[in-house]
Amino acid sequence: LKSGRLGWIWIVILVLIVAVLGVVEVRMAFFPSSGGTAARLQPDNVLLIGWDGTRRARLKQLLAEGRLPNLAALIAKGRLVDILVTTGATATKPGWAEILTGYSPRNTRVWNNRDHYDAVPAGYTVLERLKQHFGPDFKTIFISGKWQNLGTRGIHKVWPTGPRTRWYDEKLWNKREIEDQEILTMPAEPYHLTWKHVDVFVNGLRKSDNVGPRVLENIHRFKDGPFMLFVEFEEPDEQGHVYGEGSPQYSDELVHDDAWLGRIEEQLKADGIADRTTIYMVSDHGFGADENEHHKEPETFFATNDPRVTTTTGDRKDVTPTIYRHYGVDLGSFQPPLEGKPLIP
Ligand SMILES: [Zn+2]
View 1 (tube, rainbow, N blue to C red):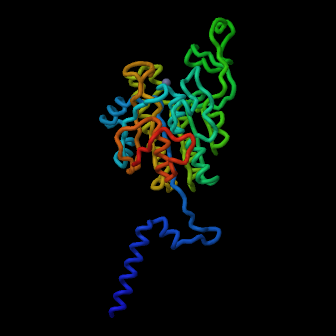
View 2: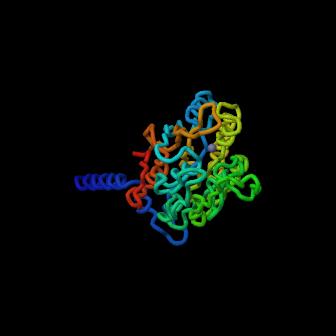
């Protein structure tokens, strides 16, 4: 009888040890690779969804009014974080470069939209580094509405003081109008060295109703995972520039972005991967209250369904380090050292 009880105690101790080692090790112990259909241990999926030019105060107002139900549901599972831009211009090019690397402009080389930028150095983006870390089976997808600010061109000419819709493309200028204007030759757009090293790269899709379907399509295509998908919706930035931040058009586009968030979540459910996909939402800069510009507008947001995010404030550079922490990637393993800090403790 005594030795029987001793046996049980040993079993209990063993069970406790196994439990402490965690679910992953349990799986490895009980489902060792068994030929071609081995139960593979794989990282989960990350969706990084960007709403370009979102003023934090307007977002919070719309949340309070119940007009962003999908974002509200996401935050209920995780967290809404106040983001303050502390390095780099509050503009699209430097914004996404910081978000996608965890570095400020001195490392991204992207200082502003029109006359001070170069390609982000090869291998610096979170997409490239996750593929490097996990190997070729980890799929990376980059989809954007905007074109030249998330562009891939090499050497090209710009007209820095030209009109908003044409300054970046010499094919859109006539000789007479640029006669006495400053024309610069730029070395490269931010993703000139990045795009070939991600599995899917598509930019310049413009409005959300072109962008959203590409997101759904790629989620379905890569549903067997693992993947990281980055998508930039160009709204509400575009409406802000045309109609002003206080316009119904600006708010309506945030509502429209929220509807796309809902459709994206529906696609994840339909493909059976909602429970192993973490969503991070972010914007590149704020927007002037009731204005048509965002020259010094550092207040924007980060939102997630990741319950491990417990902080309430952060920086634009913190997004990529947060994704590394999510995946358990050693934050100290990169050169130059990351400048942002993870929002997961
Ligand atoms: Zn803008």
